[in-house]
Length: 491
Image 1 (cartoon, rainbow, N blue to C red):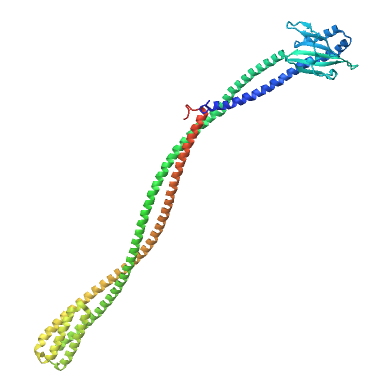
Image 2: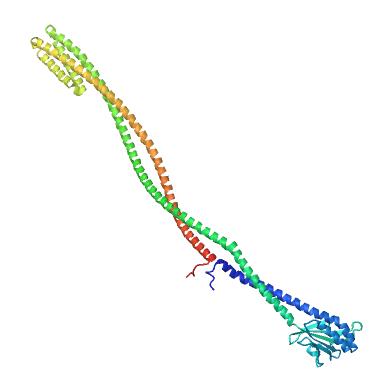
C-alpha cells in the first residue's frame, strides 16, 4: 500500500492503529491471562477447600472401614458441578471406593481396578503435603491429597478428585471473546477519536498554517519581485548617475583647465597692463616736457616781438646786426631742438625755426640789404610771430588734450589693472571652489559606484530570495500533499 498519496490523518492513523492494537492487545492478553489464572485459582481453591473440609471425616470412616459413610462424604464433593470423579485409595495404595459423574448427571461407583500410579509418581504417599494439583492426559484437573488423622498423625489413605475444566475453559473463552469485542470497540473508538483529534488539533492547524505559509510565501515572492525590479531600476539609475558624474567630472576638469588658462591669461594681462601703466606714465612725462618746451617757445615768441622792434630800429642799430643774427641763429637752433622733441606736433614749428635760421643767415650775409628789406622783414617777422603764436596756442591746446587723454588712459589702465587683479583673485577662488566641487563629485562618484555595486549585490540576493521562495512554495506544496494527500501519484 502506497502511503505517499494518503492524507496526514490516514498516515498518523496507520502509525497509531498498530501501536494501539498491540498495546491494547498486550494489555488484554495480560488481563486475560491474569483473569484466567485468578479463575483457575478460584476453581482450584473451591475444590481444595472441599477436600480439606472432607478429609477429617474421611480419616475416621476409612480407619473404621465404613465405606457407606465414606461414599456419602465424597458425594458431597459433587455439589461442585465441575467434579467428575472422586477416588479413595487406602494406605496400601489399593482403591477403597470411587464415584464418577455420568453425562446424565448421575453418580455411579467406579470399578476398583484403578492404580494410584495413574495419578502420582510419589512412592511414599505420606510425604504428600496439602493438596497436589496436576493435569492428566485427558486434560482433566487432578487434585491429590493424603488423609492423615490430625490427632494421631495416622496415615489412612489418599483422596483423588478429578475435575472437568471445560466449563472453566468456556468461561475463559467467553471472557476472551468479550475482551476481543471490547478491544475492537475500544480500538474503533480510539481510531474515531484519534482521527477527530488529529484532524482538529494537527491537520486543520497544519492546513491553516500551510495555507498561511503559502500565502505569505506568495506575498514574499511578489514583494521580492517588486524589490528586484526596484533594485534593477535603482541600479540602472545609479549607472546612469555614475555616467553623468563621470561626464560632470570630465567637464569640471575641463573647466579647471579653462580657469587655469584664464588665470594665466589674467596674469599675462596684468603684466601687460602694468607695462602699459608704466608707458602711460612715461607718456605723461613726455607731455609735461612738451608743455615746458611750448612755454619756452612762447617765451621765444616774445623775443620775436623784440626782434620786430629791433628790425624797426635796424637802421639805427646796424652795428648790432651781427650780434642779433648770432642770437637769432642760436634761437633757431634751440627752436629746432625743441620742435624735434615735440615730434609730429612740432613739425610746423621746426619749419618756422629753420626758416628763422635761414633768415638769420641771410641777415648776416645781407647786412647791407637790411635797409631795403626792413619793410618786408617786418612783415615777415609779424607774420612769423602770428603763426608762431597760433602754433604755440595749438600746441598748448594739443598738449592739454594729450595730457587729459593720457590721464584718462592712466585711470583706465589703473581700472583695468584693478579689474585684472579682481579677475585673477576670482579665478583663484573659482579654482579652489571648482577643486572642492571636483572633490565632492569624485566622492559622489565613489559613493555612487559603491551604491551601484551594493545594488548589484542586492539584485543577486533578491534572486536568491526568489529561489528560496520557490523552494518554500515547493515545501508548502509538499506539506499540503503530506497533510491532505496528493490527488495523483507523483512520478
